[in-house]
Length: 104
Image (cartoon, rainbow, N blue to C red; front, side, top):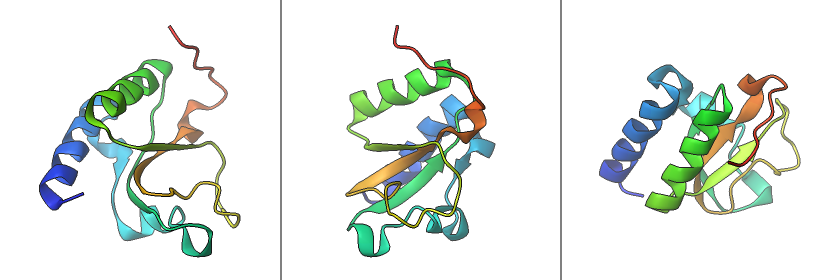
């Protein structure tokens, strides 16, 4: 993804979860990088706080072709199961705090 597309994706994601819930720093993304487990790259991490935001993220991904990788556990992530196999946005579900997310 080029820099302009990444900027647009970040703005769209911030419109859904709020700018403070879109993380793009090296430290923020380091735990999601595949290392030995894969070849992908975590572009951004988002932290939705409710089911409406999750549905909106999925809708955005479907409309834009953005890949999402969902994770619900905190670090450490040694097995690589939270690492993308291609360029992707990590959806960190930890802020959902036991809330369910049902399809509508």
